[in-house]
Length: 621
Image (cartoon, rainbow, N blue to C red; front, side, top):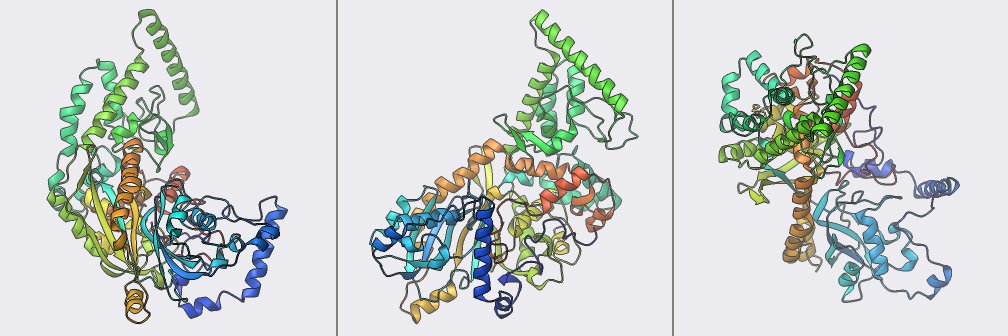
């Protein structure tokens, strides 16, 4: 697919184009790029003056400027360097890191420290005055059972942790703190990080045979004489959707008259993408252009695609659309203006006649019947999907795929704006393990996967999960993961952020020195295990399960990938990377969707407030 386009996304997230990125160079080299402290302070003051000139608040929303009288009356109290152990549910926050105008985890923590008296009023206007440093940043909506910040706090009060927590919302907790050496930095001294990713097992079901990707898998297997191997890799899920269609969907269809059933069947099982196909201009009760961009959640609200709706198959995708009277050619090619006008007029007349007839007879209109049928069929597919229970053979395939990540590999395809030759694209993965015992929650089965690595780049974990899911669910040769770690450029989508959780950072090296040489306590989350487990269950796991049940995030994500009508994700077929170089069609709208699926979320709060000094540790997810 050619060289990477770095124009989209600006300086976000990658390569040598970023400023002040410690992870991209040695510390000595990085320090040389920072310039002198006086110049940085001058730049910050100039930025503040510019904000005032623009009519914006000078101080960020987390900062407080007390009057000179209040500051003069404040008693000076000694500060100690500490490591504060925290946990949080990221829902509703713009990520972990401070931003000037948005609510963040760090912002709420800083305000709570001030309110509890752990940070003096004199230092309440700037976290830098307290040497505030995070261990790992997390993106918008990402959770953490354990994270660490280091800073200087006033910790004379024995109940200081309680006072801080009293000033926090329940979804942010301070577990405790440990006194450290004065030079301790949570960012510099962390050895590695452990992340957990939760995913419904139905994410590993194959694409529906009628979907764009489902058809492509069969076609490329035949082209590459790989049908036997492809069938073997899908052995434990063979015929799943065919059985659902025969035993559940067809009996529902049989309840309707021939006219309605014919329309529903066209909507459910469209198999043509060929403009020369005689059925390509036949009417179906959905506007495919609208479907690609948004869908309807469980509660009936319209939702941006990629964020919160479940359309696990093309069938479900069609059923999302409430207006049964809009239509287009199945091929996706636009009709002429005359044809479109004629069809629109015909549909309006038909709808009006149907409404008048319904009023006269007291029976539901044809449109109402279609909408009711669509809702029934959609729910049937969702129920069938959530009833899936993953067999051991499928679990083994997942673990075999995850094992390809172990060791030092090049992840340029798993982040944004990095090339294969960029040394910083290499990362060390110590382990990536799927728990062989699925969890059953409200009728849906979930898997837990834990990855332990030294550090991660932006979106790396979400792309690693998505790649494994695509390989397994598409019956792809798992060695394709090796190809993705090689020099060829491919576009890997980001799995939903909903399932991502920072389990904890690891400080083994510091802990050994602290306990043996410095008479300090180790930074150890295990002493808070009971509280952390209860917090994870109530504020993180249950929130994930509820959000997926109500908003169907994972089904929507995989549906969009399965029905993405260009060559972008064809690398999971038997054609491999070669298949991504065979153009199918190009469309500006589809290009925008590709960018949203595989690149950084422009403007979603992933970056720190100061573009010149933001770090990339904790860009995980």
